[in-house]
Image 1 (cartoon, one colour):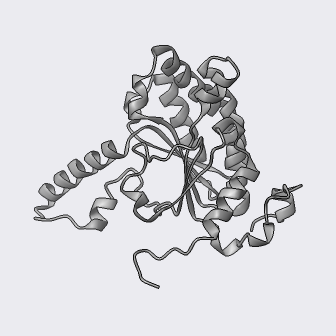
Image 2 (cartoon, helix red, strand yellow):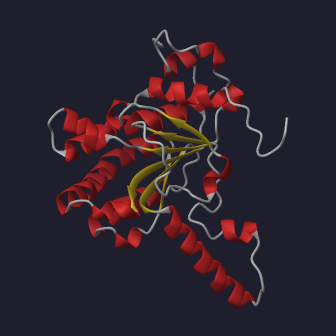
Image 3 (tube, helix red, strand yellow):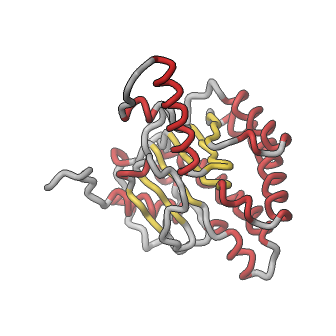
Length: 254
């Protein structure tokens, strides 16, 4: 690990057996479906946007911890192609929150050697939001630490259709009669990235929600009842330990 365990996880709760943490099993790529902001706010009789704002600290904690333990890629599901169906007030508030948060956090991310990347159809985002992401991507493009992948206006089916159309165009341009798996992967938004070994979903919901549909073919899923704003490094550690306890066979009999 990049730093001492006691530094990353001080005062570990008694229910966590830290002896089971295996540095060699830290996943290269972790994907997180951050769910439960609205329910967190509702429990406190607050507007849903307060839940989204409260979730920012959990994102910070996730990024910091992922960087410290040696995760190479962290993909966070921030806004799906289906989320446009929410109220105009919530969508507008989220877009403003994305822009303000990225502008406020980019210098710190840069200092931590984090590289920012987005996946999804960014052209549909409001200009201020798109510009904030573009500026962060440009500023951090040469960083060599954790790659933070923000899935914004992202949908797995949309990505697959985008890849299919790109593959068809490429095949026609090169007069090829077929496309292999490698060529298809290179047409995905995640081209050049490893598939996620671990997918975490908060709030106890047991569904994929159109997230990384191609890439998660052999991902391990860990679902926690914790609502996203309450997610901290110890809940993350619990998820990592669950992942590390599993025997990954990739279809092979053992």
